[in-house]
Image (cartoon, rainbow, N blue to C red; front, side):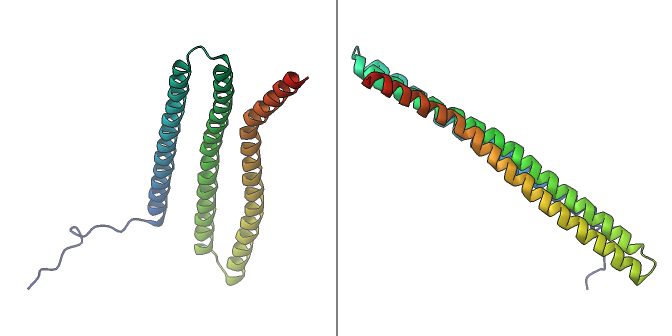
Length: 178
């Protein structure tokens, strides 16, 4: 016959706030880990690309045309590297914003839950719930606009090095044909 465990032997069930906080810590760790892995992969790709250009340049010898082609390719590659680095930085900031929005929403939900538990009447509970829904909708609209603006800013900043490279190449082509 099995002995029943006493209350001191059983594990305590964590509170809602503790579970939520643990979830956020895990989410932040996952985002950080994925960001670090992506950054390392990006840095490896950049290093390999630069090494390939250096090898091609050394193998090309004294040929001026090949050197010019390699210079163009290198400039294109560097523009892509700059755009990628800008993108990585933007995504890191965006992830932080998303986690902050989630944290704020959970905190608002917890406040509302506590307020509902302390409601003295059904009417007061309905009023608290309506206020929560109104505030949540307002924040959802504002947060979605903020996230859209953040993505547009990231896209614009990432496109600048590539746009500048295109402008430089176009100007060079026009000068050579004139």
